[in-house]
Image (cartoon, rainbow, N blue to C red; front, side, top):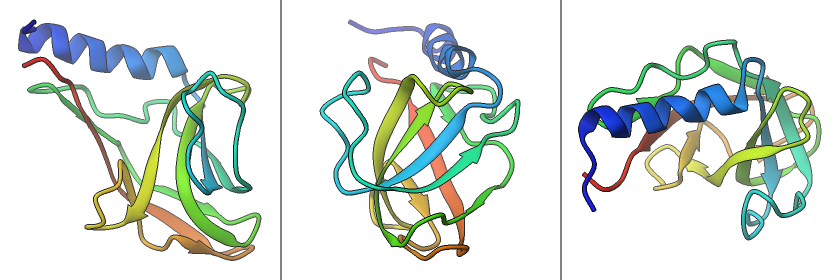
Length: 132
């Protein structure tokens, strides 16, 4: 199947609407669970409440983070994956891998080795819709 750019943009924008304002971004150690419905895995290394409009509007079948996302570590470890949850932190809506910039992960950060109180900044997070 192939989708129009308008449909792909609308699908991407729905992701932000579904997770909602004040969604939580969690950085966790190890590999991501099998899917978003599965229980959390790894150690919670950091959690940030994202801004109310945390993604730019989708354009040309792509959607990127909006603004600066920086958080302090709450535990020491190596970031392996992220989960974006609703504002209560109870329902996972998006998860993926985390690497240093240029490492090919779904999200890139300035440092994957965290310590308590250490600043972690998300450098890139872009989602591209399929079925073009």
